[in-house]
Image (tube, rainbow, N blue to C red; front, side):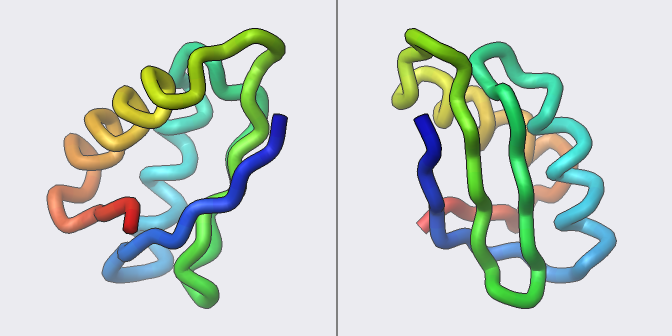
Length: 71
């Protein structure tokens, strides 16, 4: 399943760092973060609990970039 999320990230480098760490989250098959559009596209693994996965994504993202938000 694919989903797109509106995000808030301060710089392109931060977006890249967050993307690299979020890619490691269980339940994520693929992730793409665009600083220019302030969007995150996520492809979930088959049968993943999307709400639980996204809670983990936010937790991991905030460790890398404290100002990161999923709107």
